[in-house]
Length: 256
Image (cartoon, rainbow, N blue to C red; front, side):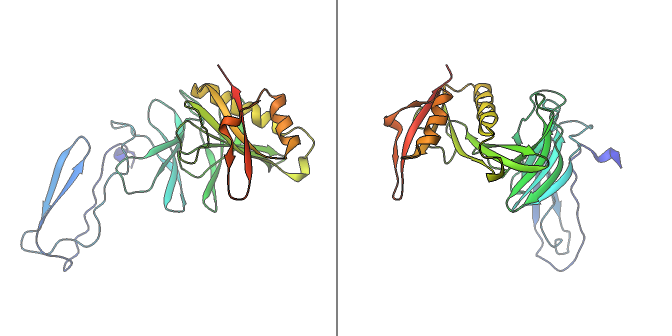
């Protein structure tokens, strides 16, 4: 059965009575156009099978596994030959799959495991090469990366970091990452859990090569603002946001 790996396969189910005689053309990467014509008989029912992404050219293939559906997407683990085994996603409407995140750049990759769908998010365990196997979460979008803190098997903290230009970013300067949704469990309040989460966002932002990290704090949240200022964030009124129900004060952490 291993002989099919890396080879685009088209499956034709011969069922009569579903359509008029015509010519269908299927474009297969690297193979040119393949035409199928019914000779004096109706064409088969249903959609034609087509590759959802030839991640690794050649007979070896990317060896996709651990397919998990989330909402209208399918997540899976595969090796494209350059990034090692990482998490990929497809919605089936394109001939290309998209790598969700290169958690561990280079070979052998982060080897995601235990893919688990919860609502519209996917939780998985991966090794970024610095912290060993840890819990990660994603919704499959390219809008940002969510870092998760785990304690005794329980998720006790999260924070999101949006790259420059990502949908939903509130950064007001170019080449600036946007930090959002820092939250910790009530059970661990006062234990300093926010600090390692913030430290990881700074590591990730430097890996992206951005100039700074921006964030917004609700006006009047003095303790929260002071926590960010102790990490080096500076008040920048030019980035303030006034929304219908809240006024958000802007802060910036220069990285260069």
